[in-house]
Image (tube, rainbow, N blue to C red; front, side, top):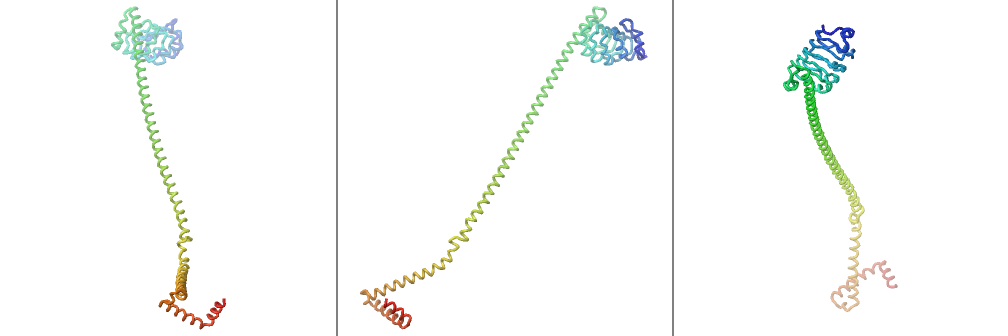
Length: 306
């Protein structure tokens, strides 16, 4: 037999007031659904069966006040066993329990407990003590509850410590990440500044090159008029006119000197000098030869008349 009947009606047949006796039923598992349908069964006897575990939904039977699980093969209780907050009497005699779930500390209504004949952890076994009479079983319940509360508090402190360690580790990771991000931002900022400086230098170089290019045409335009229309390139033509004028001036100067010499030799007392005598002779001969020409004679006559 694996269950105490297949229907809830068979369990009702076993219900005696508020007590349901399923002991010696050769059960391998607890009929939780059928038990949940019987909220009046506040006293449940599951002793002397073949139960190795209790399903987690068993802890939903919060109406239970007295529970007998003795002489089974239970190796552990569900983690949320503490949900059975109305439980006052619990018999776990002769099972295979080593420890109790931490939630056991929530069984604040528990007044009676038997943990004999279980391979309990030495610390838990010492706390539980014997349960040979009513007084010892009540002391067992009280001591085990206090012990489990202490274990729960220790575990809570350990959990808080782990959480604090995790928070500190998370803060360190965040600080490290922020430092890394700040370093990356600084690196990007420096690279951006370097890129901006490089572009500025390129801009200044291009601008300087443009200014140089603008200056060169100005110099060429300033030099071009000198080469095309300046006085230096056009000086040769005036030089062609300057040379005859210079020659003419020189001839006029010579003529003026000769005329001055003739006047001096013919008018002044120098006419008696040998040089002046020769000059006067040459002048007279030249005048006679010129008079032989008619035109010159006419010019001379006109001149003499004037």
